[in-house]
Amino acid sequence: MLIFFSICTTLPAQQTAKTSLALDSLQQLIDGAGPDSMRLGAYKAYLLEIHTTDSAATMQYAEKGKALATQMGKAYDALYFDYLKAEFLFVNRYYDQVFPVYRHIRRKLAKTKNDTLLWRTNRMLGHLHQYQNQYDSALWYYNLCHVKEVAETSEEWEEWYSHIAMYMSVVYNRLDNPKKAIELLRTAAVSFEKLGNDAGQIKALKSIAHIHFMRKDYENTIAAFEYLLPVVQWMGNQMEEVDVTSWLGDVYRAKNEFGKAFQFYELAKQLSEEIGDFDQLAFVNNRMGGIYYSQCNYRRATQWTGCL
Image (cartoon, rainbow, N blue to C red; front, side, top):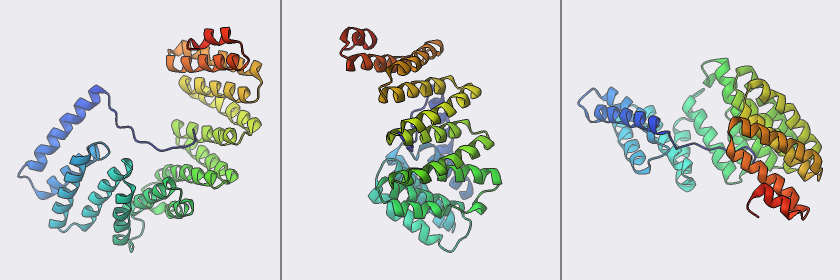
């Protein structure tokens, strides 16, 4: 329910076909007799397409690309291939294998300043420690990412830092410091709004509401969702409008204010029908049925859920 990080690996059929065609072209460059610099670029591009999904090919091409970079005397490029290999290991949760790779990269880049690859490595080490509940270490690595010079523009830096603030908010919340977590999320929300990143702004504002809800601070949860609702309406994001409206129903349900809960569920139900979001419609119906079930009104519960 709170902020989490995921990488989607499912592609639509049309995009998959385009990706396959691109990989075929890159494979021809890799296997061809062209200049080494072209082959090195092809290895990088190939890995960027597959490094989160195809385990055997990722490890194979990362090693081949690294060997070619080493042969060409390009030590930094060799580290980049290590980084891509590590990212695959991270996504697939081979945490015991990925730590040594990231630490190797940090050692090699220890004397560099304002380096993007080092910045990314520190960020990933922050993620790793966070996922293993090593929160102090996670914050240490995230704080190493406060280097503006790694970005080419101030806007790029603000985008990067906003995401770091989101990551850090998760850690502070788990360290039982919701005040600091919410402070970081508000900062991120303001930055995302300024940058025109609607998805980031929604995620930050929704995460504030989630923190309040998980701590059963229902009044502040309602205030947070009521603040977010006109934001998503102004954006014209109807799916998020349904979700926020449904959440308001959930909060009032948790407060045992079933009348208000039904009002928001009815609004969410109407919106879901209008936009054809049948998954959300089924979810809302089950929520409404759950209220009737808790009141021992089994006939109405069955009417709404269709599964009791």
